[in-house]
Image (tube, rainbow, N blue to C red; front, top):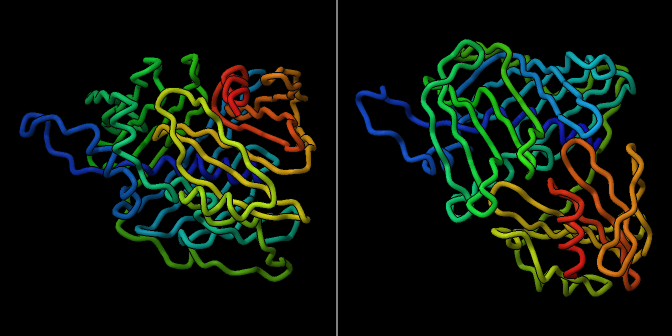
Length: 343
C-alpha cells in the first residue's frame, strides 16, 4: 500500500492553490508568498470533475498514471484509476478523515487515515519557505485550455528550481504541478488533461460503503507525530542519534515512533518547508528489504551502506552501533551519505 499512498499524494496535490484573482490591469501583482500561504484552502472552495495524468520520471524508466477525479468541496473525493492496466478499476473515496481504497483484484477495501495519505495533512510553513525559497509569478500560461498563472520556487542556497505550480486564473485551482531534483531534472508532473467546474456533485458518488463480496481491512497504522523531541526519545527502548549536519535550510520538523512485530522504530523528519528527509532508526541492526531496482553499495562514514532510487526518492540504509539507520529523501545518495556520516 505504500506505493499507492505515495501516488495518491501526488494526485491529490493538483488541488493545492487557491487565491482571489483580480484582472491584471486593475490590481497590483499579488504577493507570491501570500498565494502559497492560501494554497491549502483551494479544495475547500472549488468543486470539479476531471482527469489527471501523473508522470514519475525515474533514472531508468518513466511511469504514468491516469485518474478520474471528482471533488465536492470542501471534503469529498473520488479517485478512479484508468491507467496503467494493472491499476484499472482501483477506487479511492475519502471524506478527508478516512480513505477507503477499493481493490477489485483482491476483493478488499482498505481503510486508511486520510491524513496519512494526503499532503493536506501538513500545514504550509510559509515562514520557512520565505527563508529558503524565492518565488516568481508569471501571469501568462495555458493548461487544459484555461488561462493560468505560474509560480516558480527556487532555493536561495543552491539556486535550483524545486517546484512549479500552474494556477487557474479564474478559480485558483492548481492545474499543473512539477517537482524537480536537485540537479534540475524533472522528478514528477501532475496535470489536468481536462476539467469541468461544477456547483455540486451527487452525494452517492462519495458514499463509503463495503460492497457485497468485499471485506473491510484496516490499512497501514500510522502513529501520531510530535515536535517534542526530548519527550519522544525518552520513551524509546534504545538511544537514538541525530545528524549534526543537514543541507542548508533544513531543520527538524517532527518525529514519531511505533512498534510492529516487536520492533520499535522511530522516524525523524527534517524539512526546508517544501522538501523533506526522513531518518528511520531501530535496534535490529538489519537492513530493510529492497524492492527493484536492486541496491548499490555506498560508504556512509566508516560503514558500508546500500542505496536505491525509485519514484524520485533515494533510500540509503546502513548499520552502526547495533542500530539500523535509513535515510529517505529526494536527494542524491552522496548527499544522504553526508547526512548519515554526521550521525
